[in-house]
Length: 404
Length: 233
Image (cartoon, rainbow over all chains, first blue to last red; front, side, top):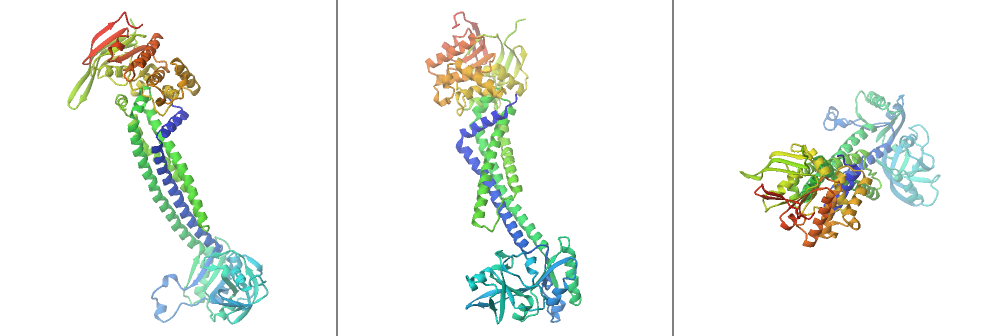
């Protein structure tokens, strides 16, 4: 005797409505489990996306050349002999453009100095670089132009200022074309940066960018803080990295004394860590689904006990074991589905609240976690209801009917 | 050869209680024809309810054979028993056994739902069953909104909605006042008049005597089986 699915669902729905407290408790338990998975994985995924976006904002196909070997911390032969790692120089930087795999290169020097104009002054980060920095970092100009395309050694007295500097020093007046004193030198403002905001390491709003040679003169140093190299394509990153290492080793008397970080490498590491973190928190949250399952099992066992006479009646009316089993399983499935839907809605609301409270964090639950939490919720509900449902199906009708 | 609706051959039913074996039914042989009105009477523990459970295929005999409509149903599987209960047997219980969260119509609908009857046909048959028992205006009432007599009539409607050949009533007036009880018996007898075999278990001699055939049981045995010429019919 096949039961119509609509009839079974309706019967299960009546049963759930018949015991509202019990139903509500189970719904809450299941909803909390699903919501926890959704919110926590949304947090993890948000952190992953945030870090990825921050790295992406550094530029595309980027290699960062840093003086010194990351693995030579501590004592090595050169330190024993009183040597320090060689500095990166402008000539080093210039030599890196001699490869087909390198598209752009920007040397970087960083310092801080007082900036003064029209009677207003403040301390600012001074970034020495070249015209290619704009393209490498994917920045936008708000006004004027970026650093001129000149020889790296040429200390042109021009500067490009961030929007915060512009507002604080020049207020409502036009900045482009005005003179700005940086330290003891005067620079003509030729451009104002757009409003990209912060990216890793640099707050563009609060920075003054000048030619690298000018920065070296200003800070009286010949070394570079680092060199940014943009490979021609994703596939050119590896040969570009090798070229940089080989070229600088050759220039530094055969010593490999630089560290080349690829953006992809760092990003992949962060990605792996944050993905693992997301899975871990999702897994921890999934435990609550297991707890919800155990609660469902307990409550369903109580339900079978409470409804013993009803089960006996159904058997007397001709219900088979299979039908009783299906009735209880559908009830659990309905409950799990409602709980999962409720939890999903609560989880999405929670993620929305996180995004509202922390706009920088794109806290969207990944599709896999949403689907998995629903599947686990449904499976948990059904699996943990199997025992009570089987118990109901096996009840002796005479004994069951004698129970009130 | 005479065909019987129910035929029991040397039925025994034993229960284990601890180390003891209790013989609830001993060597019961019985034939009931289609359309008969039979009462089974006896004191508590005489085995009358056990016999009714066996007749209703809710229980299995420890020994002997049971033929329903001349089909041996002694060794049916659980599933076959369930099918037979659904299609051929109607139960009326002392405690009504209505599902409290369902209304009268939904309670009556249950056996049809288990039989997989289509919804339109179910509704029509439920309406007819309720109409026949003068409960049409109570179709959407929950059991707790009905009187005891009305609840038992809903239970009778549920028992008859599948048009069974046998109606088994276990102390059907046990939870009712005298007036409602007599009304319920009248209803059952009216169904019997439509050729439904009616078997009523009761310890109330006045109710039992209304049946044309009266079976008396003591200690799991039939001690009397007599047909009355002066019964209600």
